Image (cartoon, rainbow, N blue to C red; front, top):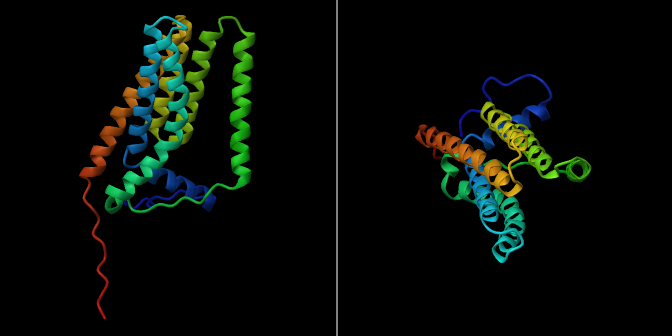
Length: 216
C-alpha cells in the first residue's frame, strides 16, 4: 500500500486515523465501481417499471426485485469488496482492518437514518407533487451521503452531480419511475467510469518492494 502517512495533517489522532483509513479504502477505485454497478442495477429496474403499465405483473415483479436487491446490495457489496481485495489485491492494497463501531455509533447512525427517513416522508406527504419532491430529496440525500463517505474531490463532484440531477428532474416534473432511472443511472455511469480510471492507475503503480529479513 502506498505511504498514506505522508503529509499528515495535525489534529486529533483518532480523526487522522479515520481519514487515513478512508483514504486507503478509496485508493483503488473499487468502492466507486461497486457503487456505480449498484446504481445501474437500481436504475435498470426503475427503467423497467417506467416502461410497463403501473400495477401490472411486470411492474410488481420489478418492485419486488428492487425491495430485495437494495438490501442485498447494501449488505453484500462491502463483503464482496473485502473478499476481492484479500483474494487478488493483498499484495498491492495491503491489509486494513477497521475497528468495529461501538454501540453508541451504531445507535446514532440508525437514529439519524430513521429521522431523515421520517422527515423526508413527512415532507413528501405534506407538500404538493410529492413525486417530484421525492426525486429532489433522494438526489440531495444521496449526494450529501456520497460526499461525506468519500471525503475526496471526485466524491464531492459526484455527489453534487447527483443532487443537481434530482433537483433538475423535480423542476421539469419528470415521472417518478423514469426520474429514478435517470437519477440512479446517470450518477451510476459516472461513478463506474471514475472508479475504472482510478483502478487502472492503481494497478499500473509499481509494487513497493518488501524488506528482506536476514536469515539467522
